[in-house]
Amino acid sequence: MTPQGRPKPQRPQVVRDRSGSRAPRADRIGLGGIVGRLVAVLLLGWCGGFLWFSLTLPDPVPIGVRTDAVVVLTGGKGRLKRGLAVIEAGSARRMLVSGVDRITTRKQLAAAAGVKKARLGTTDLGYEAVDTRSNAEETMRWVAKHRYTSIRLVTSAGHMRRARLELSRVLPRGITVVSDAVPVEPKAPSIAAEYSKYLLRRAALAMGEA
Image 1 (cartoon, rainbow, N blue to C red):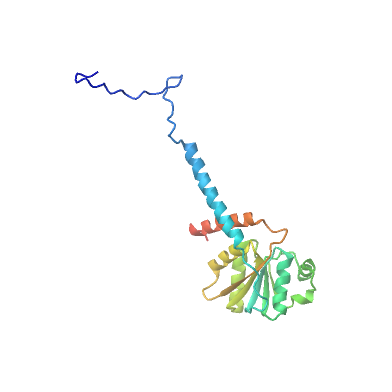
Image 2: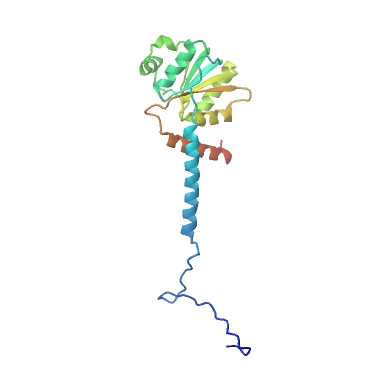
């Protein structure tokens, strides 16, 4: 008791473990907790974005939509057949198949797609591209060579956004790109993998990587 008769304030007791050191407070978040919460936030954001990505996959456009040319990115039989259908419908004058293996001939490409070689008469084969980034660069050079102002881009639905992202990086302004998405082929990367690649590439471009 104090001289005034009031009870003497008590100091809070410090809980110590058996070794004599102070026990951590229950409300104190360690480094592991911070990292865990950050991972949870990132995972939640990834899931939300993936839901948007998968529910808004692009669709094919009508075969009668006209452009100067059509560009097909290799990766599935359905893509080449779609490009040929566009040419044969008179909706484009010429086609580029970008990303053809260097040892693949026109005859072999036609056989792999299940079409006759004669159907590739207005088709240029691009042997320089090895990935989506170089697909865009090869397309840019081809478009500039022929002075086209509009192209129809044919690739899988899951790959389309990343392909458009790379094209927007290299094509001059004023070039119209029509997205003509082929339904995902059985051998195509999963939508989740495509979404992750799209996010990584967007982040790289945002940080100034070419």
